[in-house]
Amino acid sequence: MMNFFELVPMGQDSGARIDRFICGSLGDMTRSTVQRLCEEGYIRVNGMPAAKNYRVKQGDRVEVNLPPPKAAKPEPQDIPLDIVYEDAHILVVNKARGMVVHPAAGNEDGTLVNALLYHCKGGLSGIGGVARPGIVHRLDKDTSGLLVAAKTDRAHKILSERIKSREVSREYHGVVHGIVAQDTGTVDAPIGRHPADRKKMCVTDKNSRDAVTHFTVLERPDAFTHMRLKLETGRTHQIRVHMAYIGHPVAGDPVYGPKKPALLGGQCLHARALGFEHPETGEYMEFTSILPDYFTAFLKKHGGSIHEGV
Image (cartoon, rainbow, N blue to C red; front, side, top):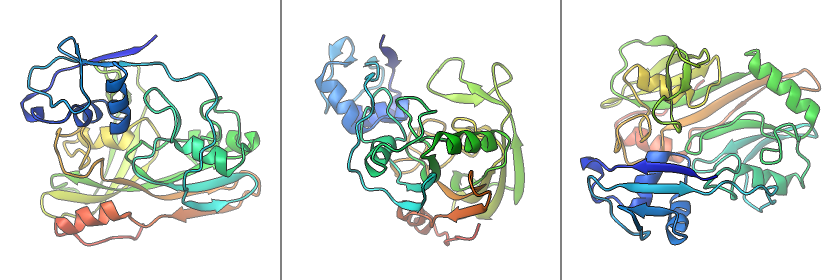
């Protein structure tokens, strides 16, 4: 069964290429994937097959049929990885922005899982299922930074339990729209599926789970705020949803913020630090990642300085 979406461009979308428009509207898809779907006839505009270079107009009816993901196991692919730490049980990876973590509809290959399978020669935990070997937790496609993967089922089980019991420390740097008045604060608001758009999450009391994000303001360049954010829970899109909820969506996020918030090619959000007890030795380990070029360039453009301290 296919996933079907109907999108209607607004005035600010007029003139945008259809691949950019769909990626901005649906989130975890690459432009090359959208172009391929156009070529294969899965995307139509006003009932007619869409050319991959079509520019949308206000009021167009854009229909997107996403074919189901392939049932086959992901194939190992020789994709470069920035490995921060590795042993026989786990590895910590500094994920690049734009890389999808595991195969899904519209992103069947070229993912972190494909790269890990090649690097580890298939030696990853199987608890996550056929499509998600080794994946203990996720980062959104356009969020860069640190995540831990498991090579053994035992390591996977222990790390998953520690994340659930809030024993894993995860800190991010993010740039959000507007000037956040408080120097520190906490957003404690439950998150669940958006009632009208199943691709999105939202703050809601219905069918939701508790979600807590702590923040500290680092600087306030131009009309933005550079923040350090710490997750107490780990819900889907948590930081992006919570920041939008308090009126300060993450810069570059077309899903929860303005359609054209900043020319970033993705949200300005980086998983800066990760800390946990090793699942076998019990030793506490903490890893940090320097802010990537896209992040520092955006700060400099708006008159900010670079705060690396966590």
